[in-house]
View 1 (cartoon, rainbow, N blue to C red):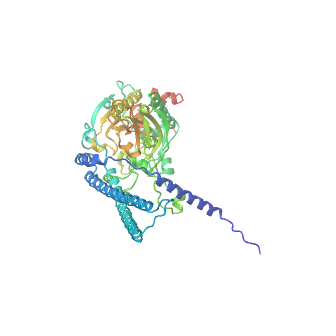
View 2 (tube, helix red, strand yellow):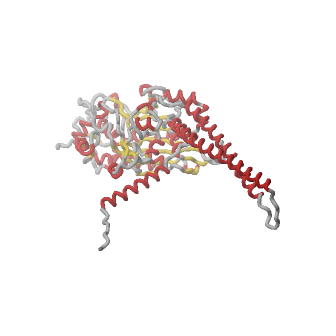
View 3 (cartoon, helix red, strand yellow):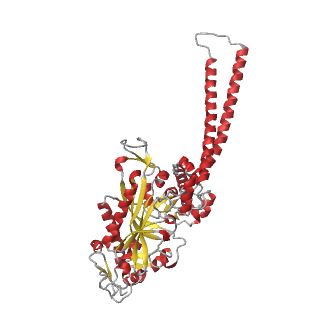
Length: 527
């Protein structure tokens, strides 16, 4: 009788391979989870100030005093562990001496009495018992120590960055106007040529979406059919306009010393979290003991492989998220590194798609392309010496304002108040363009100094030069800064509404024309 040969089902084989790969990925990701380096002593010693700072920023779940309590408990447990470990080491050393001392030299024969043998055996038994008790104590304390350390880390992670002393306290209404460029906000009718505000027509400004539809440059209906609401297609000159804005921003950034990058559109949850974004739901935060982030809904999209979903795999330790900004992959590319002091400031420019759930957004901000789930953005990131980060922030804002002034936009720079600072920001400026169709200012970019908030969570340090350095030559955490160069949809809104003509055409800014295939105007599409 012939032996039977088992034929493997290709589908089953593939499923087994995919399952093995997923489990291996989970193990690798678990080992790679980032552990932040919080200054627990600073938090404990400045708990009152940090609590006031959190309240001023409308962060209601911050408990710096609890961090101090947990830190003291952690240190006490650590001290107990060290005491028991010292006992264990001493017992081990004594047993070694006793064992060695019981062996006579090779060239001698020494008679050992029964009493000596019994005393030695009793001493060894006592030492073993002492070592056993110490080991059990260490194991017991380690369990407590791990639990306290987890609580300590979770509580410290809730604390926002401290705020710049000059940051206004309160909500958006407390924003301070730093400067204004242009005067379109005083113009009540559309300029005849779309540019010269001294020669006006009788036409009223149109909304950007009405203009975009008449120009045929965007298709929201197709986007909704394919991907859902607030997704879009650029079409025809609209696609060229996006590419022109990207080229304009990247060219100017590169000329200013920023190293251009095209970044991944995904990052691990731990990386997103370390950068100050919130990658988990309220329920997950509560389950992890990290309740809340003031109860705000997460704006992050999480990625789940289909193979993992269909096979009912266990929760991935560090799943991928779609990035909300290129700031995340740009900063994180230097994680767990000690940089040379001569490499700073490190100026990076990153192009990426950005994905935002925009949970809670409603009203006219959702009309057209003003607030989308996916858009293209050029982001600027700087890694700086701590003592230079404030001047680097000024440099970023100067770059932004020059970029928008050369486009011909009317805009204002605002110093944002405490309620408007993300968890990572020490200081933040927003730039708003006047959008005459909307009859209001609309945010087109921001710039933030995050000091060492992200660097502590990502392990990015610099070894400072020895001259005049207070910390000697020990590595210190860098400061990270970020600024928007061009967020394409918001910029298109500003351009359409600012440079429209009474006949429905829109003037293309001169600085963008090199990438517009000879077009100087966007013309209404009769179709």
